Structures are given as C-alpha cells and as structure tokens.
Image: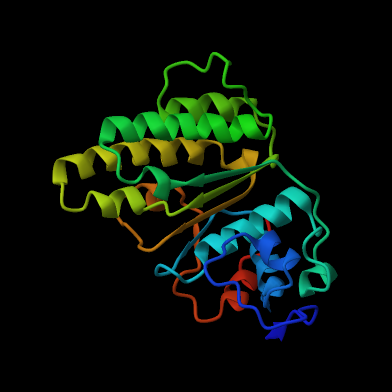
Length: 235
C-alpha cells in the first residue's frame, strides 16, 4: 500500500468525500488507484457494497473525477502509469437525498434528478419534450440519444430508499416496483454506457438490479478484487 508523499502535514480527510478537495488540500490519501484503475477499466456493470462510513462515496467521487477530468487530480499516484482512457460525460445519481420520500414523491424526484444530471453534461435539456415523466420512461428516451460507450453512470446508495421504507411494506413494494422498472430500462441500454458503477450497504435480492443486469460484476465479497477483475477481462 502506497501513500501520497506530496503531503506536507498529517491532516486526515475526516468526513470528506470529494477526491479533488483531498488532493488539492494536501491531506493524507492512501493510494489505491492501481486497484481503481482496474475497476474503471472494466466494460461490465459493477456493484460494490460496504457499510456506512467505509468510503463508498469517496470512491464514487474518485471515479467521477477520473472519467470526467482524466488524470488532473492524480499526479504522483499509481494510476498515472496505467490509465490512458479519454474523458466522458459522468452522470452521478445519489439516492440518499431522496430516500425519505413517499413513493409518489420518490418517483417524481428521481425523474427530475435524472433529467438534471443528464442536463448538466449536455445530453438532454430540461426543456426537452421527454414524454411521460417517470424514471424508466426518461431513461428510455435518453438511452435512445446516447451513442455506444459514450457516458459513465454512477449510482450511489442505491438501496437507501429501500432501507428507509423497510418498516412500511406497502410503500416499500411501490418503491421496489419503481426501481425494478428503472434498472430494467438501464439494462436495455448497457452498451451505451462506457462504465456503470453501483454502490449500497446491502444486496437487496428482490430488486431487479441483480436480475436485470445478467452481466453485473459483484465485487462486494471478493477476497482478492484484483484477481477477480483479472479473471473478467474487458469485453
């Protein structure tokens, strides 16, 4: 395990989840970018679960920085030796911000979040006529506009809406239905995305993320992630 030797003090990035802020502030950063390079080189959807406060959001933000800005914030790190991909529009959906909504509000807010994120990278405009406003319909309309391997999709805390409604069976069932349709539609356009990365704290077996993505690579319980990735080369 290597450490970023550019640090001039021992300040720890406690509570920070933005990779560029950590690097620009010369805080301690444990260099795991050799592994991140292997993960980002994959051409299949990847799922990665870890408990809260285990750095999932920082990992997602690091991937966002890599794909959107290249090696700008990675000077001196291992990934400089291995990474030679171009940059891409990066769409980042964080489900934690809408987890407490009732099913109707969740459906509306997820739809608006999708449109806003794709608008920010110039793929659609909020003013576009995108048909019926539901997450799966919006993804379907957007997917038709995308070229193959053209966009990166990062989904953080995918299971937050599920765990928030775990004690409300009726609402949970509605939330699951919305998510099932959402992920099933993404599956139809997997080839349009250069990289799909999904995180959460659980592996919810009843959500179609795991049945829709028949080629989903689950790294959560792998003892040797590097070996697992080496056995699943790029396609």
